[in-house]
Length: 438
Image 1 (cartoon, rainbow, N blue to C red):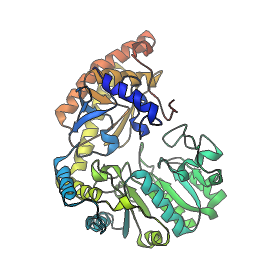
Image 2: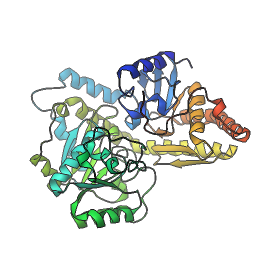
Image 3: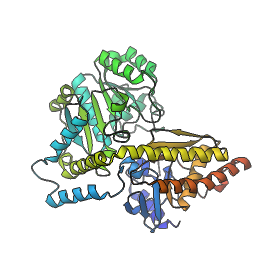
Image 4: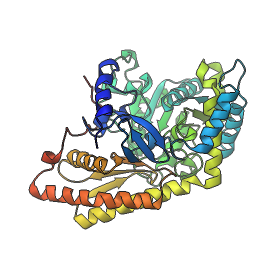
């Protein structure tokens, strides 16, 4: 693959855009440093064309988990085009925001009110503001990844490794006010005892418990129920961050399957199939506190996101999209397991099927992953360590992906026998987390 246009454009970008991109997950260094195509000219279904005209099937992240129906879905796009033609912004409000609020509340009967924004990080910050306003307590216990805002990064002010076990290691709290130190405390997933310890030390000041209900592994029996019980006991607002998990396994939040109700839940990503829309839903008495705080932004009222979300939900419901997302994830997992067993390569697969991730349990696993990405790129696939499935996949596309992966796994096995894979890399090894780019 000749990807020189994208590679050269990224070198230009790094000189004028701090970090090179707007999103850490889209930095080429997270995939294949110096060789990744970086930019697209067209995306449709699960197919992508780069600036050099190369064609790929996307087994990377499908727009970082946003395009569950596939890129440029006709039904969603047509609804958006109509909204643009009728005016996407106005001095009056768009009626679709009321319709979307009613739809989300109907899908989550425990909730009574909704607010909207554009991004996942925004709704996490909004949820924290509402929860603090309701509980009238400042401190937060949290588990998982919840975005870039000050309240979250402040965890690393007291101990720079506090966030390492949550998703991204090495996040730097530069620019975060030092006064936020000791205002947020991490606990591990499935480690109820760690939350209990936080509450023992800071319980009277903990007003918020925020966590992802499920990501890499399933909750152990009693874990989520225990968190819910502790939150109620100390008068803290329990927030489930469903930015990633929402609308992947079922039509709504994954907590509906898990059987534990929060006080607030937040959604983004899959909600608008690639168009910017995010939501905060919650119990009426909790959400009403938003009216006593100042939470307001002009572009939260723009029409496109609401229209896209309604069209996306309608199509999901009609096509039972989540069943396809799960089945395709299970097919990919089975394929990986089969070829790994065939070649005697130890691997580990984590995550819910619609967000599955592959880890090589070998020496130098990042080098092995980089090699896998490198070789699959040459075969016409965008590939990282994680695959967000899409309804635009087909059984034949997945079968071809696994078939094309087979000889790469054979080369990996051969390199393990010969003592290393580094010499087979055409560039540098992928980054494992946050790295400052200069």
